[in-house]
Length: 178
Image 1: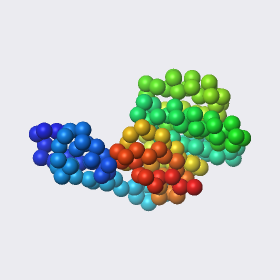
Image 2: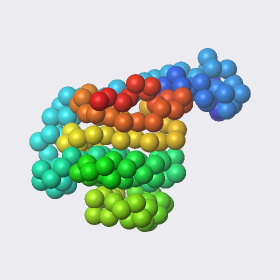
Image 3: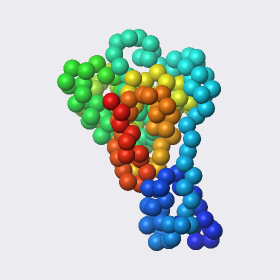
Image 4: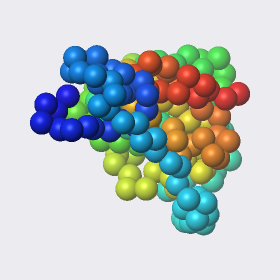
């Protein structure tokens, strides 16, 4: 990966394997350093912080949260398709999407074309997504490739139902919880 480096790190075994494969290097030179979830104090602070969006408080239906740059890798288009399908079955699920990126306009257009209209909100960059994660009803991540994503790690200790695509490059195989 970095020819001058004595070793490098990856956040999961899958990511380390992928880096070694792409760099045609020895896997042993890539050390796995897993991420840790936030401290309990971080969750307590997020729970007592002001609600970041009215949907978390209005009681008009469950909120699906997705967090990530609005770029191809994060596959928000697939998330919108899935959410439109769920809503077409009568679910009042409302998606909130945290993140900024070059695909924002295209994703907003796709949401309108899928009939999501006012049922989806693009909230842009949010400095502390944990404030939203602790209030969401379901967490969605459809990335094409990830290491071990921070928002998914943050959602896990909350026992928040999570739906995530599986990719061998690091996403946890058992991230979905019903």
